Length: 423
Image (tube, rainbow, N blue to C red; front, side, top):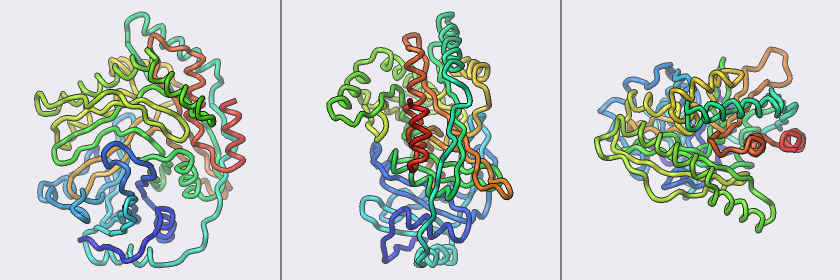
């Protein structure tokens, strides 16, 4: 069932109104992506089911649902929203209705199983609420110092020189505290780093993810699978000429080109394992995606494939966040990094009511621990990293981990904290 609403609300207004009735789950787009990746946002509350299966069975994945469409003939709204961790375990939440917000037209619609599920959300959206509170991120600091991460990079380069691997993605953790409203903090992060793939995922009892990933891990719709690996990063500059120089440096860098070539080939190979024979191809030349905080290079790979566990197991964790060869790179990551990654560098997103799938890479994501009783703040982690190849400059790789932390800032206190991280 689909009901178009006769009024308009912003993504913020939708999120805060729905949140009054229960734990919120939201996929929020506030930037354009390739194709129509950034057009729609979706919001839901009160899951009616959940599973830890890699791919939920029944419902959206059953053949009888594949003909469903969303409003205006668009791909259907999510039925399952969740995340797949780096280790391949998953947590999916099923919703009997979801609100769709079209960023292009402003149209609001609710797509759901029953009239009662749709009416519940419509009534919540019709209610005025008090303005939300504030959020403050503070005590943000890397768990390890620069020297420790430099040593980690040098050891990775030893493996590369020895021929064990060609590339490996190494990360380090920031620990921080969040005081106040985590939903406010999420929208602050989105304002600082707009993305087609923002997500607020409240996994009650485990974690809350505030995700601002710019990278599409996997999209499958009508038998066409897409993945868009990203590699190579330069910071944005306030001066237009200096900013353009950063783009030029990124575009001309042999090291960054080598990174992107290797991970593109890895994504292509992983997709080809389960795709229709001969259907996998790289679309167009490399592109530079300019965000509000960094410039990044990406490619697009497509193939004929359907949603399946085999596809997810082949593609995740993705080559752009592991390395090449993938299996050996993951062994080295486990040896060199100081903690399990958890949700970081897995993937998050939705399975639509039509059986479609869209997952973003779990990067640029704050992971909040459950709030402790009587605690005024929540503890959180934010991972940041980059790809290491034979041409890597270790001090510059350390600097890149700071560039990627900038969107963690929200408010003056957090800006000060992240400024200390960035120097």
